[in-house]
Length: 102
Image (cartoon, rainbow, N blue to C red; front, side):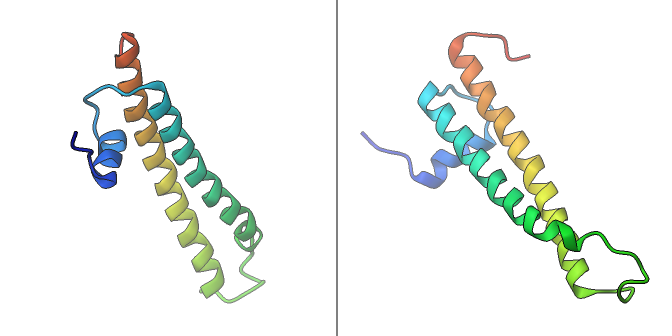
């Protein structure tokens, strides 16, 4: 039996709404998405104190604060993409259970 590549399987799990998946695949996908968000959250907890500043504290353009806000932007994008991926993953699981998806 021809096994799909890991890249193709991940694209099926997180980027496609067609198909069905078993409980094990749903839990693995959910765990992967949660791990990604936990890593980003731990990074944000380390950087968050540098995001609060007034204009009297530092220069108008501070590279450190700019880097923190860029990280926050990437974190927000990752959060949205993980939410969309979770939705697509759950649609496949609901379809497998025979429940309505709309």
